[in-house]
Image 1 (cartoon, rainbow, N blue to C red):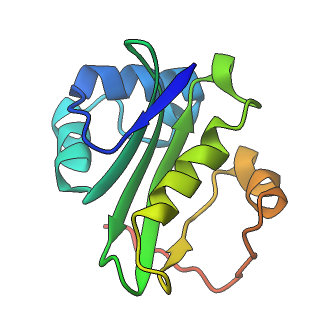
Image 2 (image 1 turned 90 degrees about the vertical axis):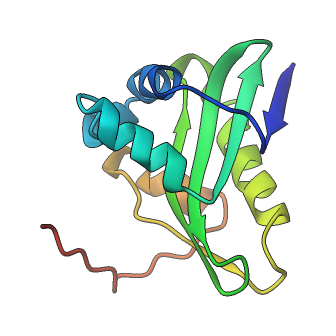
Length: 131
C-alpha cells in the first residue's frame, strides 16, 4: 500500500536515488548534491509517495498557492509506474492549493503523452532562459 505525505523529511541521497530510478535523473543535476539539496530545501510544496519506508515518488512544486503552482518535478520509481502514483501525487498537490490555482509544468520528453492523458492542456508558449 502506497502512502502519501506532505511533511516527510527526505535526504538528498534518497531523492537522487529516486530520480535515477525514475529516469528523471537524466535531466536533473544528480551529480551535484548541493544543487539537489537546494532544490529540495527551496521547494515550498513537496508530496512524497512511500512503499513502507521506501521513497517511490515525489511531486516537487514552487507555488504562491493562489494563482500558479509550477510542478518542477514529478518522479516515480520505474518499478512503480503505471499504478496511478504520479496521478495521485498531482491530486495531492492540487488538494493543497487554492481552488483557482493552476498547475504549470514543462514535460520531460518521455512524459509528454502522459500529461495530456491525465487532463493537462498543452500550451506551446513556454520559454526558458538558461544561465
